[in-house]
Image (cartoon, rainbow, N blue to C red):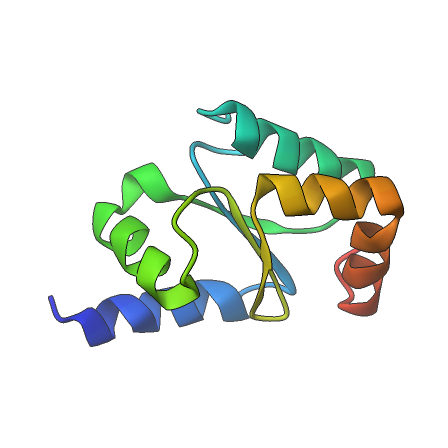
Length: 108
């Protein structure tokens, strides 16, 4: 499979919903503490978001690091733009910015 195919899969995920969380595990069964905290912040904002379990697609997991220029997970995207990882998501949540960004994107 070519890298163009992987990028296409990433773009399909990003266009599937206003908010997309690439995470370890699933929202109901996160497989790392950072993914769990990001999900909790999104749920606290009543966000409607798609999640992508990066463990189910190792090729995508590696490609997304280059695509986003962000080395760690989770990664939250809103309207196709990288918002950031767990620390940024939690910081925005505490400041009330996360709900605002999600609301403007039609995801809350």
